[in-house]
Length: 297
Length: 339
Image (cartoon, rainbow over all chains, first blue to last red; front, top):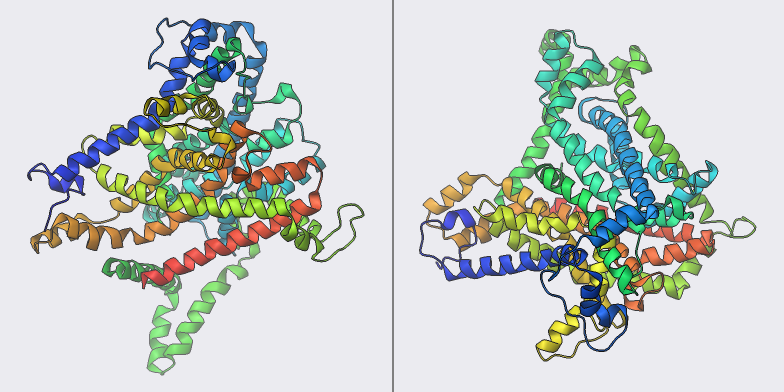
């Protein structure tokens, strides 16, 4: 049998297979390609106005020829960041709106979703399976299907054009319930039973057993939901009319002038930064969270 | 195959166990049962015990039976108010006329299925799914198998996951500069001696969207496959290797069949994530993009702006029914594949 070296670990100690080197070469190239847009944005945000005009003139100004872009800025500068933070109050407003939406939703989910997940994981009640199925279906439906119903209820509650109109439906999103549920299921029943025998009340079980043991699941759900709500597009686009309520995630700066394009780069990077921090800090949890959804019951 | 059967047995086992548990709870009756068996009444007795188990809480009052539901209650009230009730209203509206709210039967449904924009969006969605799902799922599988348990896999895995964190607005800026008719991609192509094109305003826009989707979801799908790989026990490989199976044979006869259950979830999740490419499509090309990337969400947005709630309602109901059908169908196909 020819050794193709497909199972990383197993190939150890055998002759260095060409197939494996080839595969890793492709993987590395692919990874670099995947990261290029990120690199591109960061690099662009440090370029001065003149530099950007030179490189991107063809796209942003409509001059002849093609855009060209070096890997690193020749004359790095922080001027676009300074401009964003000091000279554009509307950027701050948008940033703040994003923070309000994201943390409002996460805080709500933390309370409501965790409790529901605990109920589904460790309690019996009539029609439990039916309820869970409803939650699962709601999790799987894309926004467009729920768009009109969302609008109808927000209209009734007079919450259109209000940040709460984005936050409240987000709090009751069923996705985190599902993720946290998977982690709570792992807690052994015997542990809960023995705690009950020791006289623990039900809320104590939740507070002292479920929360600490299931914490990685809760964090995983929060990381996933942070990334989702930080770059939320459809809901604010549909339900918010007033510009002062817009979050960063739907702020698309004008790039048709060289002055603006630098700002656009810096704005993209600033929008990306919180998500990047959460990603880097919570990558393990993120991976666990994704994997929790992978295995079928 | 073999492993699949094992999994199935495990599921059945689980069910049996929980049922046994219920009868066992009524343990007080066990000695009685014993006596009954001597009287040759074993079957109905046992049955009675099971039934008793179900009836028992009722005697303690419905309150105790629903006690566990209290944990769900806050969440469920929200779900009811923000999702279920308004959805019921949407179903009702899908049978009403737009102006006078009079019952019009299936007219709205007939209308959307004759609507060219709707048909275009459906066609694009189907094409899009057919084009990118197999590529994404296969690519992710190859990457997952290669990266799984390897020493340097972690860094590359992080690189593949990174696009998940990049907000669509940032992506859109990069895309607009890369795929502009005078943009960077064309510049690179020019250097290679190939004439580029206006990527976003020709049929190639479709392929740009396919690439963005794969770019964004590759890391996610790799993780899903890895979850499947983590579920395969090392012992099977050991045994196979003792029997002289090569790596390729191991992959083909152990890894792939064991990953079959993961395929269902990965397909469903990738399919549902595919609806999110609207974000990039919208941010790069606006409300009316090139027609090959006119997706369902564009159509819904445009209807929403024109207050065509009747069409929106009918389309939402139709789409949810189709999605639900697809999910259940896939699940069924998966379940039968296990046996």
